[in-house]
Image (cartoon, rainbow, N blue to C red):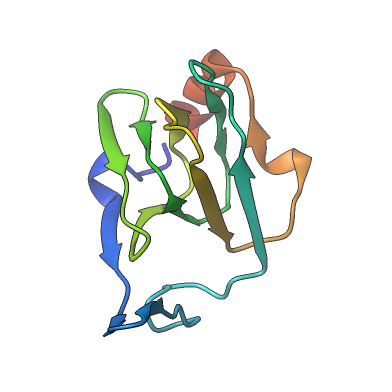
Amino acid sequence: MLKTTINDCKLIEFPKNHQLNGNLTSITNQEEVPFDIKRIYYLYDVPGGNSRGGHAHKDLHQIMVALSGSFTVTLDDGIDKKSFHLYQPYQGLLIPPGLWRDLDTFSSGSICMVLASELYDENDYFRNYEEFKTWKFLK
């Protein structure tokens, strides 16, 4: 069994440099991010009422950030579920591998940026929940 649970997820506060003319937040490998970032991608223009995610990763670590607007990330470890509402661009949700994730309730104009520990690899995905649970508890 892969031992990660929803309790291994946490919100990370990134440094916020407040200026009168606007804020600046920086993110650094191995400082605020506990892994080397190998890929960055972002979701945007998600139509109202639609969901994203609906999968799990075997090895990939991620941090999700609401750069603009808001959305909800629901994580599932095969036993328990926990939801995080992301809405601050200086906060990221650390998601270790071995957790199912669903993203929904995107606000208008929201942007979800994802910092990933690995390059895209389709073999790292579980897109079927029952296959994920079988892998999770037989590992």
